[in-house]
Amino acid sequence: MYNPVFELAAFDMMPLNVRLSMMEICLQALVGINRLYLRQAPNTPAMYSAGLTYTFKVRPFGLDTWQDIPRTISLKSGDCKDFACWRVAEMLEAGVPDVSPRITVSGGVNGPTVYHIQVRKDIEIEDPSKILGMTPITQEQVSNLIQGSGGVAGIIDAMKPKMPGARGGWNR
Image (cartoon, rainbow, N blue to C red; front, side, top):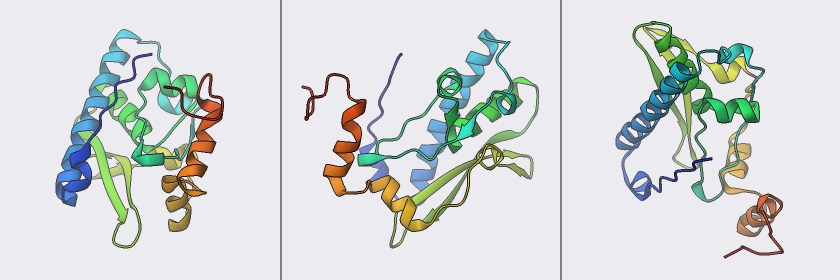
């Protein structure tokens, strides 16, 4: 699997309006990738009939994964950006006009900023994550998921079983 990694140091340095523009560019890229996939794989199931469930992904050290359609299908889960970009691509390929990802923001000042991605069609808003099982979480839960419980050591311990060949430390 091809795993490109964007390390966007500028993201944290920018004001909110610029961060939102940066996210929009990334979202449009994922929509475009998903559109190309749908054209090459016309038998892809519709998103809402693919047996998917919403998952809030842990983001240690700011790491955030962005899944295309085949990755989301293989995991049978995704988060708001994965689902919204799939749904937008699906709708655009079906000829639906004026549809795009929509970013909402909460938190910030004394806690982490949380971005939520939905689908905007004209003036209507569709939230694939809610439709696929997202439930509300508290600000404290968001902080723990983003920062990881147990600090850096807890994050590293949680990652160890997932690292091939790990024997109590990072493989270098």
